[in-house]
Image (cartoon, rainbow, N blue to C red; front, side, top):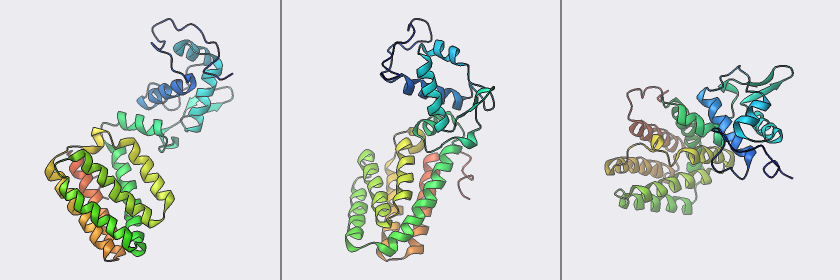
Length: 255
């Protein structure tokens, strides 16, 4: 019998779910991740004891223990003998975890976490562009040219434009052969690609400017110029984010 199937306390009361989720441990984990990231349970403080969590979520001890185990795996808590379950500092959190990253982005008014995400993407993609320029075959170059040409036609259709934008970057990542770096970038982007805070404003002029950056990257890869491709990718990602960010504090990214 799974934790989600077992008998649990009554769901009556103000803190119970209106519709109980199918997987209770997953739902409890998600709520606790959000509370920890929001600072409801600050670093260095203990989570409420098991009976309190059972009552708050109207679930059994088994569900709470499973949720705490998942929180440990994500680096958000540490179980200490005699001290209970202690919330850990953000430096120990798994920022590649879907729940942790999403909650952190949602709570970060300064956009610092998105700055860090873009810097990470920039470092990895610049290196992959360098390698792609050395390894790209004729088929890869043709695909990149076709995508850039098509994006010139899509500057008034931002949804389809951004789909081709992501495909362009993915072709380069695949050409580099670095599956780990590609996996990290894709994992990070999957958390933010549909959020307004990351995508920023959408205008024709921005798509036009963005595709000029794509064309420079394509030209350097087609010319098999590794350093030029890396610099073009670095510049493109930096400039595109600073425009989307559109905030007064843009200096942090340029480092």
